[in-house]
Length: 213
Image (cartoon, rainbow, N blue to C red; front, side, top):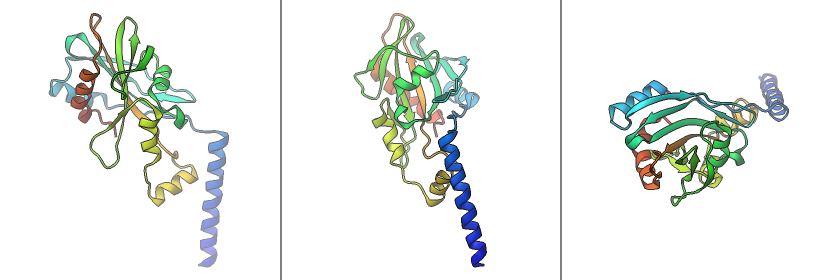
């Protein structure tokens, strides 16, 4: 019995060492899970939160960032709501201004922090836009909104995990942390300016149906 236990622990240690070396030498590319498009569209239409879906544009994936297909919706006053899931490999890049530059079609020009520090504002083409990232809040039904690593990454880095998850991360079976968020963008009508207060109200209404977990 003693020898079998030693063999088991030796095997697990060998596998963990091999996985750790692989993670260092050949780190995994990030993965962004697809959003449940039909379910989100159905929920938002049922509760009158959008006028109509506008289709999608394709996601991207590279060594540093992965983004799902973006879901586009027409809302009131000819404004547009765009939602996509994004995941970064390096935790220090877990911030909106880095994520949006990696996803074609949602990069903000002349971006800056808005009057609401959870949002950034800028321009997409000739229209003003606001952006934020939404992540799950452990122990709360309300998600976290933010644009900086301090707002987004620190809560994830500080999450407590059980011993099984700790082992899986040490063994390289799953990543040490999942730095994934929903990048949410409000694009104004041509003759209007996107409002932070309106954006905040819109997110509070649609967030229960976005399946951000």
